[in-house]
Length: 147
Image (cartoon, rainbow, N blue to C red; front, side, top):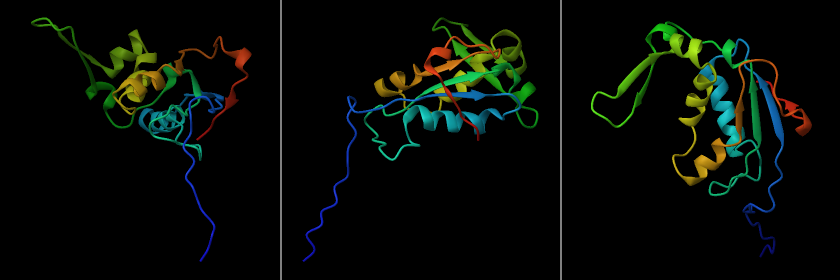
């Protein structure tokens, strides 16, 4: 009988080592880029991934105002918000969102790809999106992440 025992290591929040990554969103397609960002935020790119522990890394997205959509999504895609009051539903197209709050396009896409629970809210706090090429996280020495 073979005495080798293989045990699956479960990550603990105290043992997690976090990295900082920077992504240039210039000419990137929103959906494809945001799926990769969501994977890095959750930690699915690491061999120590554990579903119930936040093992992810920090992600900085720059040039969020230069993202691309395929097809006619700039005119047809709508972002819907609801205030909770009667008649409080507002619709904004992707083109209007790009003019008003371009960072929200990336944030909304990533937020829809992470869990909708306490862990997902903690994971989302590690995402930093900026419209220009400047960011205040140079002290963290982020690594370039390309797809």
